[in-house]
Length: 159
Image 1 (cartoon, helix red, strand yellow):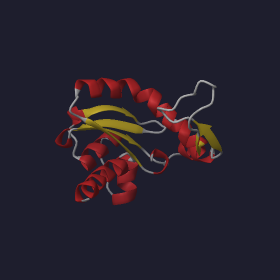
Image 2 (cartoon, helix red, strand yellow):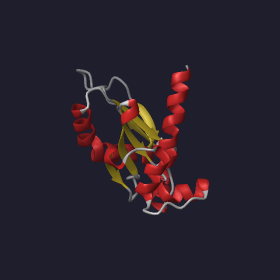
Image 3 (cartoon, helix red, strand yellow):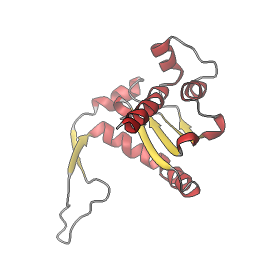
Image 4 (cartoon, one colour):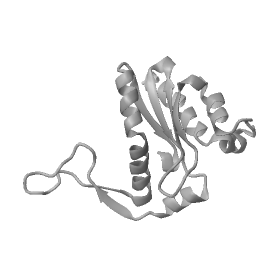
């Protein structure tokens, strides 16, 4: 499907932009004055007014992310950065498998879950942290922009 390939290529740019000025330097040999935000705006072409939120300081189990409106495609884009810092590496190293119940599945009347999945503990905790930090903002933006869809994008730890 050509449209799907076009969308994948378009949002892959956002995934690499999440690495901010360090990614611009490492991947393209360019330094963006103004730091991470300027690097994201330059790479994605998103207008500063369409930045919704950003969290640029990673901690163990709390990756860097940014959220923007992609007005031309009517999408809210939540982009989670992959591994870059030592704290991200600590999240990666929490690599035991953990059981979890995916959203939409619940316990039946006998107390058993309908579906149990397994995930990398560090990535699952990182996903939960991003969910906690962005849930209200995503809900408010989707309510305020009912004709928009939601795109989640990332690479490595952010994927």
